Image: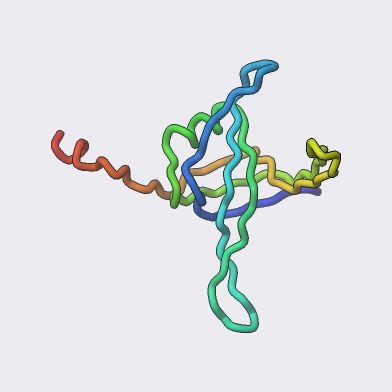
Length: 116
């Protein structure tokens, strides 16, 4: 079984891109997931790379901003690629199958909404 469930906050505004082959929406986000350090008792964070596809990717791009809290479930995937200099790199990331929005960060221009 390969299943991951995480709750965390976006570390930056998401950017949606579209594949050249078939125009599928994709966004790569980093989720800051809280944890406690057993030695110090202080709260720390793990930074987990997440890949989201299709309508869910578009929704994240449209509605979520840096600091927004989301829950994701998905699977871990490790892939590799080669740098231009020939160095082989490995990447471990979570491929999201389900995304739930838990909280949104208000836009900086919230006065536009207040005046209506």
